[in-house]
Length: 296
Image (cartoon, rainbow, N blue to C red):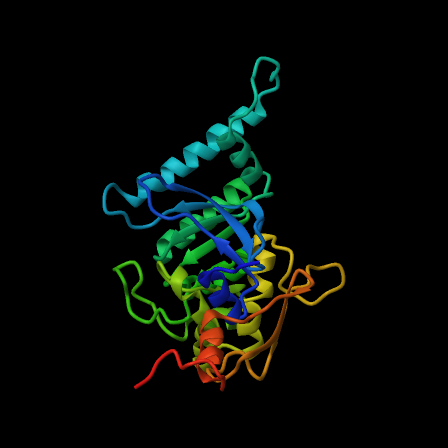
């Protein structure tokens, strides 16, 4: 099947599955993230409701305290509905109610985007109060409260190349944050920072930068494979009996620039990594009786 350029770029980077998260909007509740594989098959969405995304922390309008309060009230209201004994007169729950029910039961992870240390501590309280399966995204100040994050068993999604404060909320952004969090016992997940979906193919290089700045090689490998799979409940991320067979065979260390992919399997099926660039190279460098397409 024809594979689009984005899918191919991700495969050439060794990415076999991708978590897609919504962004923007005025509400604290951004929406639901979903998982796709990069096989190129028409029905490539493997999970449509993987995690609930909420935005906390600094806002251009309104206060962070109000945003947190809105989330608390929404969860409390759903708790009250679930606690009612007589549900005979209630109709079918809305999609929002179904999602919040899963969240309160711990069946759906909640990814909270925030950066400041004080906001991280409030998010941990939110996890404890409602029993949430909480994941933090961004969290440039996570190193300040690494001990609390490790104790609360809260995974952190961060960019390994975030080394400058993007705001007053992220004053502790640094290249060595991933390594420090790993040493503190925090489950680290590496991702491309900001609106970096078009640069996901650089993820392996970012992991190499994390290693160069204090993260263990094994820890960096887990941060782009097993850790995100475990945190988001995705089938894969490890080579294990009964697990989805997503395997990438590299020519050498995958975190090195010169390394290439020899073979790749997605869900047990070997897939092609041939690109349009490869076809053009072969077309214009192969000797042929046909006239040259381009001449000097």
